[in-house]
Amino acid sequence: MKVKINRKEYEITTDDRFLDNGACLQLLTQSKEKTIRFWQATPRLPKCLANKIMKLKLIDVKHNYGSGCRVFYISQESLDLNKEL
Image (cartoon, rainbow, N blue to C red; front, top):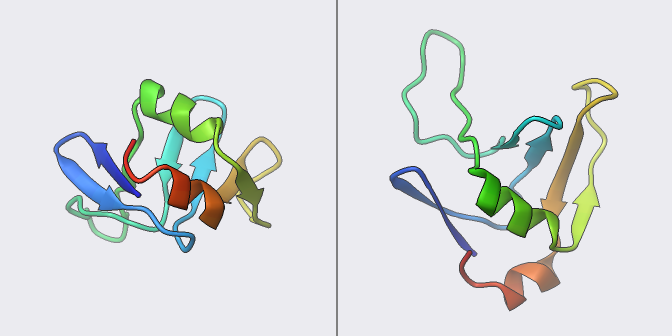
């Protein structure tokens, strides 16, 4: 599935992980942004795109980001049905 975030396009697969902290939705596994020292810039999804993704079938993953966060990936059947968002 292809997703356009800002001016860049990302190809989303089942290997990609998303972080939802209640305020924003971030794509953790891909980064096309410049890094500053050891910080990796993760793309933040716009609200309209985040709402579409939250309606798909999502599978939660164990994480160490705290209890207020949710890390997940999109199931293969949802990726097959939605080629572009």
